[in-house]
Image (cartoon, rainbow, N blue to C red; front, side):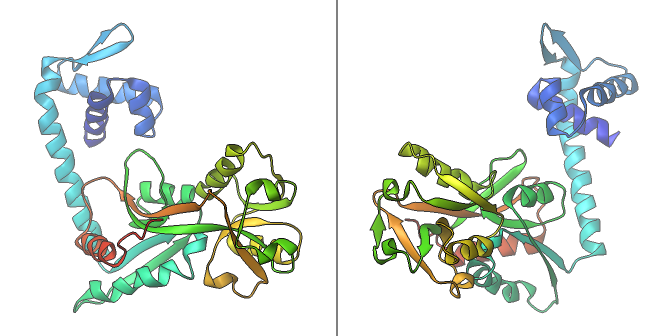
Length: 293
């Protein structure tokens, strides 16, 4: 019956079967079946159809606060059992480019969490979309990634990361500190994969100046892009991170087009964060006062 109550509460929020089914990761027929089954068990009609829309009956309005309370209580109990079964594991995810600079600073808070207890930590590296999916599926407690709008996800800004035009150090343009995007419009580019937050930002920079870049290589992480540039195959856009120091690169800023992306701490918005998670979030926000551009 708990599943049916979850379906009921979600439908009262959306008043739309298709949207409620989408948020619940169900097919619409499955949602309809759950509501019909609940109505049969209760012996009352919970929703009334009004053309393409639905509305709550007086029975639904009466049931709603109790259903929400029941779901919250059960979720809290399940979380408690999870903590009892594996109280010492803390799961963190992060995007590739944070591994060498940002992440070590962020992880400096971990020894502060344990107090007199001993905790273990699991780490997962991936793209933002992958991290968000794992947050939704309760496979991660937190993730560090650029801002990402998704249902049931909440976040807080931590850190602003500058993105540079990266060129081979042997290239004539490398001696400049700033360039115009039009000056490099005819160059070949290696860019981060499509679908990522960074690629969206870069594409918007080109579009703002009506430039169509020649993208000859796409990669999922910074080192492969840095190798491409250092091999004098073309240019790229990357953050200045320590893992790239071994490559012969020059980092340039674009005139009147500084590029930044904000890194967020992301977690699931379900109101049942563990004690360890609350402490981690609080201490992390104290370390990173968000040095914005």
